[in-house]
Length: 477
Image (tube, rainbow, N blue to C red):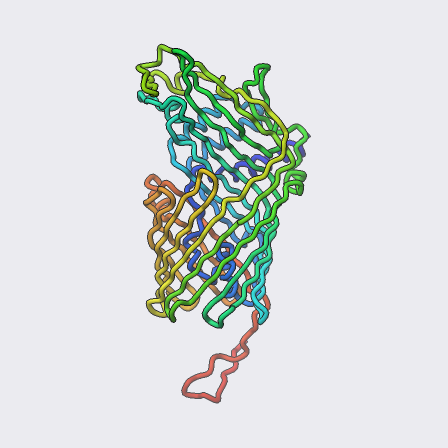
């Protein structure tokens, strides 16, 4: 019994990490894109493998962790209640109201388990195993604000609002290869990937207001697809009551589940336009996962008659409510009426497009412009970053500038990269304001890690002195 309770606590931590990033608006990695020799930049463009050291090794947890978060307390409480079996519609409503306040948000958390790289005359290779957790959702709209806002609001009749959401937890095995096609001018890279899914959520649920004679009804339609080891509890009328952890849940079965499999690839290039101007581009995560285990799909078919005493006016396809109606003052569980099925489904991973332009002002200073476009159904968005990369010393580089992350405009990226004889160390954020002035930041996040350079040749002699060209001073032990 104690072992089972311990497994549940571990699972709570894993799922909490998945949604810890719920209201963040970007991946914490754009700041590292123009630094080609950073150990994890080939995750963003496989062509950057040609800039890596000859032998590289990274092992979890030092090989790189990428996390971002905002307003995670509400989600933490919901998960705790769910896994304790006490999750109610009030808890779901609290989360929903919190999400409505923010526009589209996206976060991808990456934990590199192992990274092994090798550069040779045949090309540059690396093998990676990563744990990926990402969530992307957009529930802000006319229907959701009509339900949650306490101010008088109007809504269009028969106009649906979709509540798109995509949450994924999967392990990724990948093999990357890059080759310098034109010497010191053009490099091309590709990465083949195999995905093993652990959990997913795909929402296509819609909300709409309809009119029947003189009455008005709020309705919910379509599916929320789940591949998560939970039990959906509904009453005799099909109203969703709670979501609990499956009784036979095992953390080992969850982490080693190989029934949800997918494939994908990355491709990219890096081209020197002039001796000081570089152009690069890549496409990342072109692939999908087929979900076959722990299926708990919910088809919504809820309907709630809008009370006449809350209506201010109606006509011309518009319904206006008074300030007494909102999800905080009125209960409408009928909207959570569902049917559950166990049919398999597929999810296409969000595809990320990168484009970068870098100009070398002098040997110590580079200026870069990076554009990132994330494409997925109903939730695509764009981000832009302009940074300067300054080499303080031969082995120390600092990068900072300005970023627009989706609809978040107050972002100052900052990163430090230290490269020594035995390894590389880095830390960075796409928004330094989140650490300095947290109240002013819509996005919070940090990326950090290190790697080792294997089989580094030891230099027996010091560098040759200019005034003694034929003399080599032996190093002291």
